[in-house]
Length: 107
Length: 121
Image 1: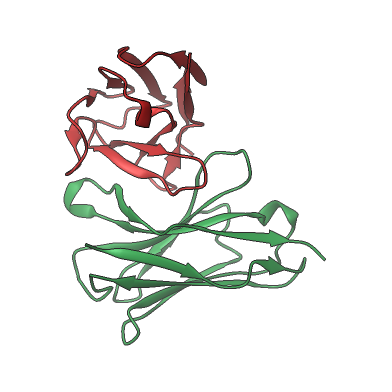
Image 2: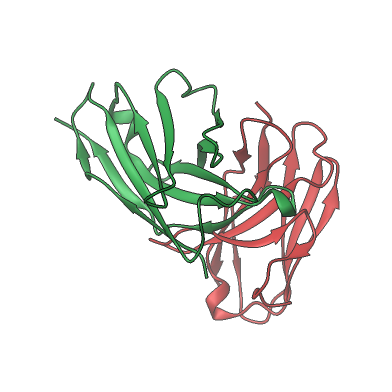
């Protein structure tokens, strides 16, 4: 299976900070990479698809970049509602796999 | 706005079959544009893709679960379903249904709220 590894596993940040989360694939997935936000007790929400395209309705402070094996999710000007866990997911091959998650906590 | 809603028993005994249904509203499972998926999340663990189905009945399963999984679709009820046989405690998880969108490189763009299934005697 294609392995997805996120770093860091958790981070503490303040409102207004710029936050960057990294996702690495065990082999090239071109840009078949998506990012989700999950809040406690809720379903994941799609933020970014195809590595860098913003899902409709998602604030522009979220952005994604990368291709091949290395990808980043950036949250500029962190807002109180952004404290959550973030997951990357590849759709390059079956089985579809997710990263282990990055928990963004309030400093 | 597409909405998905999971339903089914919250408690299943070991060795029995887990059965869940996902009801879709605001969209049609008969749409040839999307695939309909099941994903689970064991407590404190990462998300795990189980499989998906196309309206025609064509399926694709996670090889790690393939021998125990059946996903089916009922276009007349606008629903799709999951059956997982011979369950153990390791199958305890929140189960989500979701829409896979091949038009945007296959992300899961709409999700149900999830339902917790506990495997215990």
